[in-house]
Image (cartoon, rainbow, N blue to C red; front, top):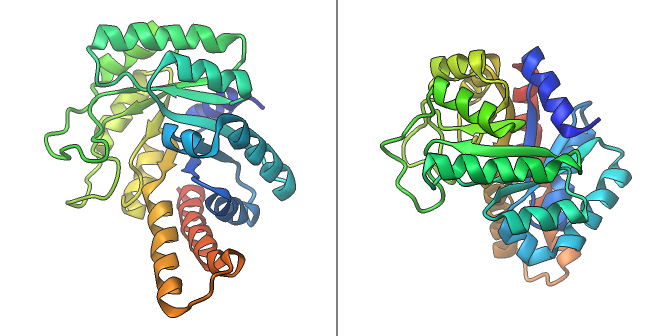
Length: 273
């Protein structure tokens, strides 16, 4: 099934899917080990930084091989693509889904750029995600959120033809300085009139009950990145402080297991919503 069809299905049924960022073989394996213990599907996401680190073709080949080996249904998604050129490259090498993030540009420019990507993705039958509103990125101020408004979301989705829309409803990328408080009524209002599937960015650090309520109010895709990186690195630091072992194959597995445990928790939250 195409990812855009899966998200449309979940948008109607009130279900959600986890979208997890990976950064190397270990984090990818950690994610898929957790998914393999469930009957759920998964969206595997990469940022521009990960693409620069792994290379485009290596990223695609690694994902396809890993999904086949683990016998899991999953899709590869470009997270926060900053240019049409990068989107084109990702589509050409076989990405199932792309995000064009022009959210920091004026609204009309965001619409224009996003519409171009939607048209570009049509021949590939790829899912297209965009962002509307202020969702603080790493290093940006997390206060003073500019929430996405229902009519604005509806008009944006209809003007661009996107399949999925990341909305600003109280989350932020990276670690939270203060506990997040999702605007659940706002999610419900946006969902009621917007044709695109709704995406929650910055789900790392959001309490389980809020995530469940977000899904119940219309969120169809839950993004997790920071939690996975943190789980891996914190576990790795503990291991390295206790050993002089230099064999990577012996050092990395505990950190990989930490990612699996984290993703398993997120999958449980989503399945119980």
